[in-house]
Length: 302
Figure (cartoon, rainbow, N blue to C red):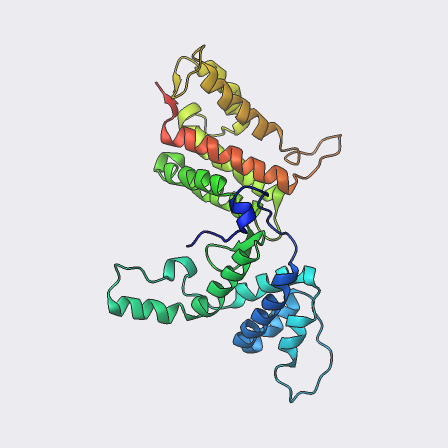
């Protein structure tokens, strides 16, 4: 995938790169035109798009087969276009999106089969992704091609990927699945921050369990952060610091912040508050770092 285009002034550092949460003036027309083409591809399934978006078609001449297409493409407000595109992507057939693209090492038969299976991706998802890149949109197409997601900062994305690779081992349980789910929920077009935060904690719990409390079947992040100070002499950190304990102390502070920052976990006399999208994304960043540290052995048993 090529690097996203940016104006010369931004590339030379004269202005910050700004991703656009709103459909920009330049993107609106091409995006509506893309919707016309994609909605025609859906055929009768277009009704499901309307139902999902609670969009009511007005009465038209039944002989005009394309009228509902144009209603859905040009009827929604600019702010609603993200949701329309998201719903259409979910219903368009896919050959696997990013995994289905031909590679140089494929033989001709495999390339032909791959291209045939990927035609909806090549015809619709590839040009849509290019539109979003050129418009510097805050959203892009999810890795499975079925939804829009908020763009992840490249540095954060790299950290998450490294954590997922490190956690792909039996003793880390379902850490990879939980971290992937947390990232997906936190960066979705319509994020679920409460669930994303919860999944981030589960990813850390799965990863740390074998290192900190392997014999406690009911271990939680709360019990493990309480146990960690008692294991100072049994754990090592790749970075120790001047006193030899700063690495473990930093991990403990991160665990505590992640655990105590989730106020929606339990009911109490005081009002609980749901986690915000910003808090959920921060939780994913914390979780990815902790998962990578413990799963890779940067912090582990002596």
